[in-house]
Image (tube, helix red, strand yellow):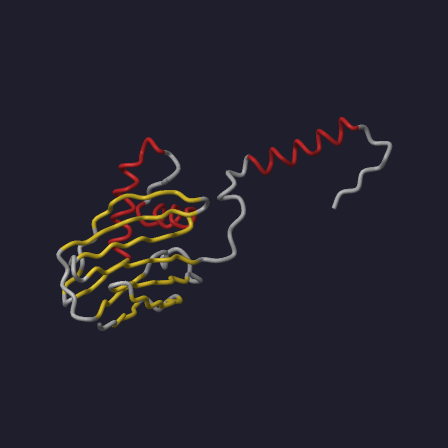
Length: 181
């Protein structure tokens, strides 16, 4: 807390407040102050009648940008919309390397539908068609594990609207979801 003496000029007060605002503003807000939690959320929706899977992954943008930068030695700023197509390709590559879904004895080939930025997070949307389902979905989720050892990945799986949830804490990366009708 700052206490100003009553005889200080108002110009100094205004100058001091402006300096503080400039320092905060120049910090690129999302990268200035690290968040205290390292959590991603992955939602997997299995529609057995349509033989399809849709996947949505939510990750903190700064964590994802840092992981991509470290892995691919390429600086990525996901907010720049002019590079949206190249960002989608990099995100797709990263997710497919770190998230595998096995259903009916076959790995699901995840295709990037797109991504969106929501506050400090990135939502990546993927889909896979022509899947077979034998009552279980085997998920390997290592998203952001190469970034920080405190990473927690929460997975929600909906199979025909029946939900199961798992929490994977680094280094655990695998879980099997079984839902029968």
